[in-house]
Image 1 (cartoon, rainbow, N blue to C red):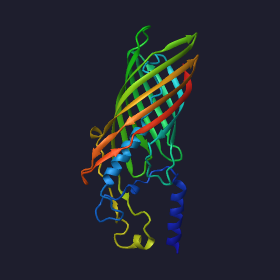
Image 2 (cartoon, rainbow, N blue to C red):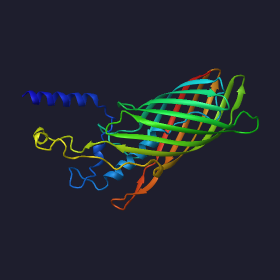
Image 3 (cartoon, rainbow, N blue to C red):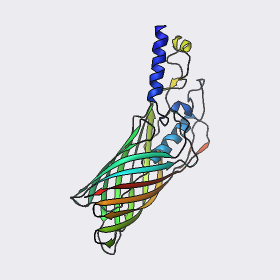
Image 4 (cartoon, rainbow, N blue to C red):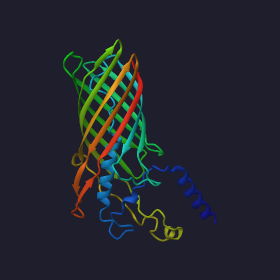
Length: 292
């Protein structure tokens, strides 16, 4: 009786802690032949999923290629609206897009046209977040008749993901031009291209989480159907992202908007020999903040 009470309490606690958009990657299928819910395409499903979500969690710049200057500082609140182009996600509840990702973005200007930034994002209706670090260098900025050109490197990591780790990194090239409207008011349109690399690995995944108490008490039952997905190597999983947007500044206040489109492409599933097409990721985002 006591054991049954403990099990029920544990299940209730797990259900209370799990939000509808928390990931449950056992839904992608069991890669172990002969295991419960075996799926020959399970590793390919995992690879497709992390490549898509890797694109989603790093698909926001919301800053033109120009830097803040060596004494400049910026803090912004941002919101990204992510569409997986008809795809779905292995979430605790039934996924209903689009996915919302609010964030806080800090940027600090440094000498030599260099800028450091950090972004902390939260995945709506989940316990997960994304941390991003970035470094930008303006190759050309501030000239009257020439556009601003900048290169940016970034690395992001999924935080508090269950059963798997996901890290992305890449660099982008941006071009824009600040247009003075009057006094301290400026409008800066910009476009850019980003090359992104996605790496991921899974922990031990229970592919039969709904096993009965009797099955769990059987010899070896606790460890049956617990396996891992094949890892996703970053340098073998890259894609292109194209983006464009604008920033509006009036005094210290700034507004901005951006559209991003990630073309992830396809890969060959080594187990089935089939070519897997990964759906593109479309993101619209906006920002409001202060620029000192």
